[in-house]
Length: 160
Image (cartoon, rainbow, N blue to C red; front, side, top):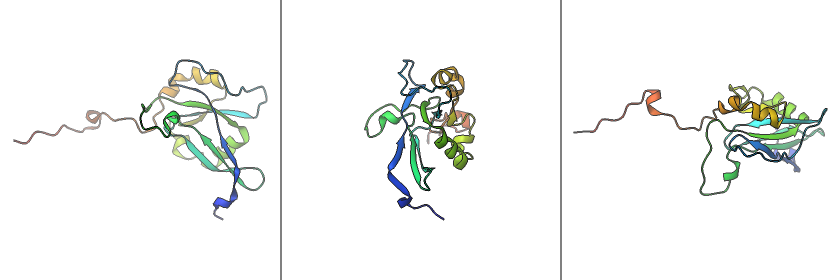
């Protein structure tokens, strides 16, 4: 049966908060810290504008909306700014049950299957996110400019 808008309760929207990102060298204070046995999962998101999953089970037969901010989240609604491209990501904390439901439903999509994935779990939190800088810098969200010569495009010759 198809899900309708009525199945999503208005007060079930969950916005994740950014803990740190790969674009800045300056450390940010962690919004939440995982403890042993915590029910939080840390996720690195390399998507340029983020993503919203509106089909996450709320445990009561309905759905809730979970949103992940993107690399360029700070530019939302602005008319000027510099877009960050390839090799950047933000780290967010999300409830473990919500993350498992998202992976179960959407785990075969490109954001999860790309190498490295654009949405990937980071078990160690902020410290592991910083330690995996090489892997994060290899993230390619597909919006970076392409060098024309590298793909075989030749410059047009001037007409005489």
